[in-house]
Length: 120
Image 1 (cartoon, rainbow, N blue to C red):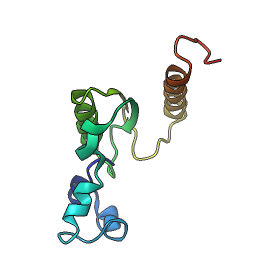
Image 2: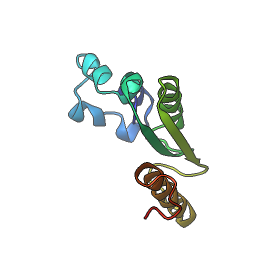
Image 3: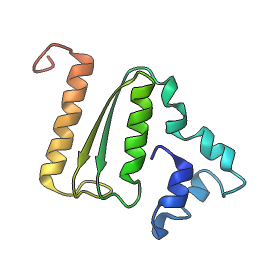
């Protein structure tokens, strides 16, 4: 989740009051929601970011990942967004889990051992 205010208004009913306990009840805690939302600090980020997102996530919508990626790229950060079609919140299919782990491993290899094909 990258935009807590959007999450509070967009998420499904089961999670609709979840943030009250973590952040505070709205509208009284609106400034805290803004301050703690990563999307509002994207311009300050330096480095690389890998975002893994399910296209059918009812808890954290794809639009949050897309907006965050756009903000990071606009701020000059190196961002890669990988969307897994048909996946929800928490990946379930074996092929998605494998692809997510491969993307993560590749990200770490590029970050910690650039130019090395096996990361060693």
